[in-house]
Amino acid sequence: MSKSERGLSNYIEEEADKEVSYYSAINVLDAPIDSGCKYFHLVRTSKGLVARCEVQNRILTKSQALLCSKYYNNCPFLLISS
Image (cartoon, rainbow, N blue to C red; front, top):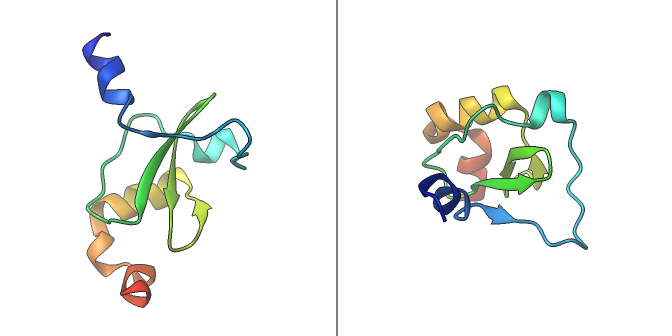
């Protein structure tokens, strides 16, 4: 297993019976993103990685994922969930 394959194995892999709804043009990330938020998760799909917010219970757009990565401490959903 290569180094990049080991790194990708850390992401959540959805079970076959669980369907993730997303629009690849706005949801599939160009590169993995890290966020300090405990509710932020990257999900590996057949088309690439998508970001998921547990508080909102939905897939984030690319721009929302970037905002979550940079400004998660100011997220209103994080404040509500605490």
